[in-house]
Amino acid sequence: MSNGIIGKKLGMTQVFAEDGAAVGVTAVEVEPSVILQVKTKEKDGYDSVQLGYSRVKQKNVTKPLQGHFKKADKGNFRVVREFSVKSGSFEVGQEIAADIFKAGDFVDVAGTSKGKGFAGVVKRHGFGGGRATHGSMFHRAPGSIGASADPSRVFKGTKLPGHMGNERKTIQNLQVWQIRPEMNLLLLKGSVPGSKNGFVLIKKAKKKSA
Image 1 (cartoon, rainbow, N blue to C red):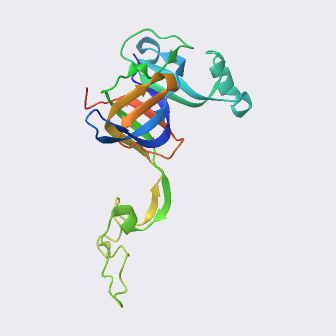
Image 2: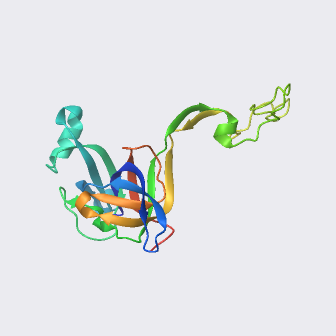
Image 3: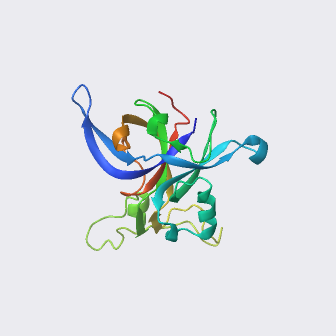
């Protein structure tokens, strides 16, 4: 069984639990992913499957990738990712769908967070800032960073203004609230990284089980 699948974030909505409580969920499109390559411990040193997701026109794919995709003969793909496998026999061209999960399972979802451009310390790190009074002259600046004759440098990791977002993030232990196989939809309780139509990797949770 594959450890996970590739999906596309569609956005957030709400559904109602049996007790009437409103539950915020993220809708993720999970069309069947195609196995492009099978790696084994004997040949490659580890067991995994390489999956392709989101078909694209052949003209938008490089020649080396076209040759790679031709082995599966299921089209060309925008996203190619690897997932570890624990059991089962796999073949190139085989499809893996959302039925590897069931309602109530816990998953880890990895994606690229929204890019927010250059941000100051108040927005980026939650600094409190200075007084808002007239004439203060110190409102949203970072303040002292402790660099003088000793140590004559700024320590790595110091919280300063800079590029915010557009980073790989993983949200752990999200619950699979509902599966709608006829619509290729997975409803995950809570939010997942990234913007609408961003690609995410959905894996079985490492730290929690149903």
